[in-house]
Image (cartoon, rainbow, N blue to C red; front, side, top):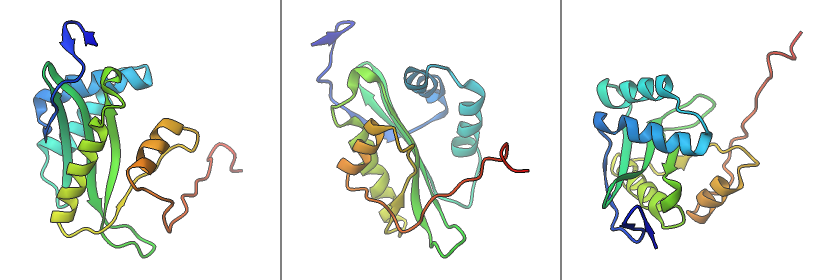
Length: 159
C-alpha cells in the first residue's frame, strides 16, 4: 500500500522533538481534532523546548521515510494529595495513515524508558471516557485504572 508514492510499511525512528517540528505537530493534531491550534502548540513548544524547567519533560517525534509521522509529550510531575513523582503522558498523536502500525507504542516505550531512567516507577495519563481508540491504545500498552479518581466541577452550574 502506498500514499503519495511512499510505502506505508516505512521504517520508524524515534527522536527528541525540536522547534522545527512545530508545524508537523500542529498538522497531526489537526487531523484528529479538526482544527489547527497554532497558539496552543506554540505555547507548548515554548514550555517544552525553549524554556528551562525544573521538571523533566519528554518531547518525542516519530519519523518515517518521508518525515514526521507522530509525536508524544510527557513530563515528570509530583502532585498534592500524596502522589509522589510520576511520569505523565499528556499528548500523543500519529498521522492517521500510520495508525495501527505501533508508532504510538514506540513513542510511549521511549517515553517510559526516559522516565524510568529519571527514577520514576509509575506513568499516568487522563483520557476522555468515551474516546475508545485512545483508551484502547493505553490499555493495550499496560495502563489500568489508577489509585486516584479524577473529579471536576462545572463552574457554570455553581451558584
